[in-house]
Length: 219
Image (cartoon, rainbow, N blue to C red):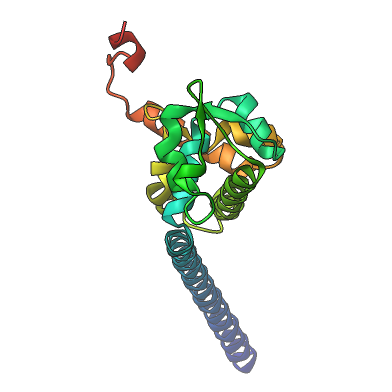
């Protein structure tokens, strides 16, 4: 009987020890999994930040003064003018836009070739083709960058900080909305449209309470 009792006691100790070891192993594995998850999250966040910085650098290095002038010029066009530009049709603009046009057409058209008649300048087909190519190149690059922003491939905060300057309702900068609409709107540049909405929402939330819209001050 004593031998049987000792055997049972030893068996119980072994079972208890195995239970402790099993529980400890599970706890250790759980901690390792959590540590791995944290490391993966950190690596992912670092990768998203790196991607956002690289996109910002690419935009800064590829965008030239001429293309920036073209964006400002096209941002001021009516929908009808923007539609003519997209379809590469010659159109007229007011003479006061001449200095901006000169900046857009550097190396393409001399200032003397921009003839004014009755307060308007007639853009030729090669002028239109050059401006169109510049803005479409910019929009395609920007859509790629903002697609990474929209799908969280690049850090959203960094992208918004770096690119919010492209939108200014007060200055009429809407990332070429009329031109984008003429090209097909949100179906063609969906990420740009989402970015504009996000910036507008962010600025509306930051607006001090009780402040009247600018238009009401101008009445």
